[in-house]
Length: 483
Picture 1 (tube, helix red, strand yellow):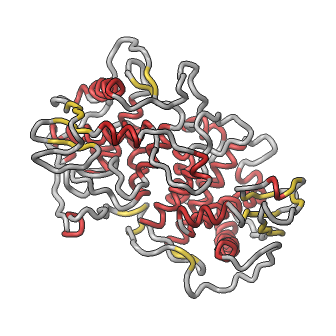
Picture 2: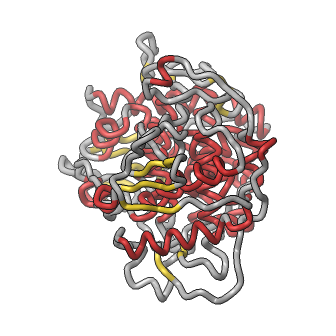
Picture 3: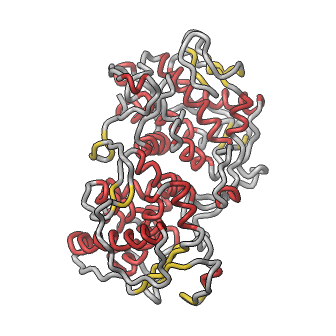
């Protein structure tokens, strides 16, 4: 985030919270009281499930001809993924688009450090950390030497399936042509949004247990899938108009969830007008000297207090004060590094811990498979904002420890984030900020999507959807959707 001058006027979240809408009770079982993520509702109509996702033990032999294929676990998963997504499209191209399916003509597994292979006019030695579809050769290729092992180690086997499902989505685009609005003038970002959306439709089919090859849970499994989409996001500050733009994590997860919820017909309707109306991939503002990176210090917390106070000014309750006094509550639930303390109506923070969380993501470390402590400044601000939102909810009489409290809180954080884009707010979103929120939301112990006790919602899919709802629609749906 970055600061900007106040231009006068006051900006408040448009739809205010109501006690009646936010009330209601729900019991916690012993596992939830122990800090386990809570199961809330469903995932686009499917039950929330918990099991290890991956290749089924009885999966058939794909029987595909893949150049360069090895017996590695990565190639085994990748080959099964190609067979599986082919089965998906063999059903859905005829049923949805009235068109017979034709599998891609060629498949290639390569190691960029191994023997060079000429493909699509280039050498595989120049295709490190990549997977791609080559239209002239009707070929899907993947880097088994670096990309696939990194994805599997960091996010699990379904990350490999996600990437290859996406690349196969590009092959489907070329088969659909006008039916998907694809021609030589179509921008890269539109093609990428469609391919992410097609991938979501494929994963819905898999989550319905219609795949012969893979099973995916709608909690931890989809969480890993969405986390892998954060990993393959564009660098903050890239423009959606750039020829190679693929989208931010916020944009990519939107498209994936659209496909998961509404299916491939909705994906084919994604066009430039749709993308222009909602895409968040923008270059840095000319006045953003830090390119989105703000130090989390006392001054920044002061600006955050003003921003939150302004955004929630019409809630009609006393706003909680942010205090750097350790991040815990002496007389109530503690969720360090930020806690809402109801007895004093304060948000207690551990500024040093939040400053560490607020360090920029080390992209080089990410691509080398090393863990990084920083998620970004907005992740730290959003964790504080989530506890502040708890205070606002407490003020209007909402219960803070029921099963919807985490989703409602994530939604309100999104609504605050959207409000910072308006004139008069002390803080302004920078490119990459929403991605930092996505990264935090997909952490096992996300605070943005947690109740007052720090218990997060089990489904990362639901967490991300709640934040996005607040960001795009304001605070109104936070009370109506998550009562």
